[in-house]
Each structure stands twice: as C-alpha cells, then as structure tokens.
Image (tube, rainbow, N blue to C red):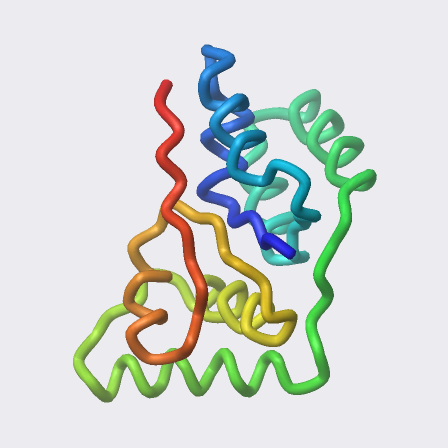
Length: 134
C-alpha cells in the first residue's frame, strides 16, 4: 500500500505536462494507493474558489482512504514532541499525523516534503521522494 501525501497531489493536480502524471503512475504501477483524511483537509483548504472546492471535493469523495486508529493522534503528538526535544523542527503537526497513518498501515509514503525525511530518522517510516517535473 502506498500513502500519497498532499505534496504529491498538489504536483499532480497543478501539472501542466503529462510527465508528472506519468511519473506518478510509474511509481504506483499495480500497487494500491490511497490518501488519508489529513490530505483531504489540506487539499480542500487550498482551494482557490468555490468551483475548485466543488471539483476537488467531488474528486476526493471517490478516493480510497487510510483511516486513523484510536491512538494515531497520541502517537503523532509523540513524534512531534520527540523531534522538538532533539531540536528538530517539523513545519506541520499534520505531517506527523500523516506519517503516523503510514506507520499504522505499514504503507510506503510517497511525498515531496522534507518533514517526512526528518520523521524517518526517528521512526521506521518507509518513504519515497516524488520526483515529478513540471
């Protein structure tokens, strides 16, 4: 299973060239992939207008989601806490939540966000950096 982060969806959705989408499809190949609700939140909050909101909302409604577990929140907070104690800054606590969903589901995290590389030094998070080009 591959968990696709918001940073990758933004690349895909804004891409002017087919190459970005082709790169994504090459990476996921026959592997199942999904989003988490944090990705849904981040994509919707970034909508530029009502029309884009409706299109995104409709598209996202048809996607597969890896859901949070009862203790995902506490474990994500622990990641943030431990990194901060080591003097490592994570730009978004949501990234800790996304990482924890990937950990809970033993999913590979496809991303383009340096926070996940920081988290991977603390937890056994499997990651792949998305190299989509515009």
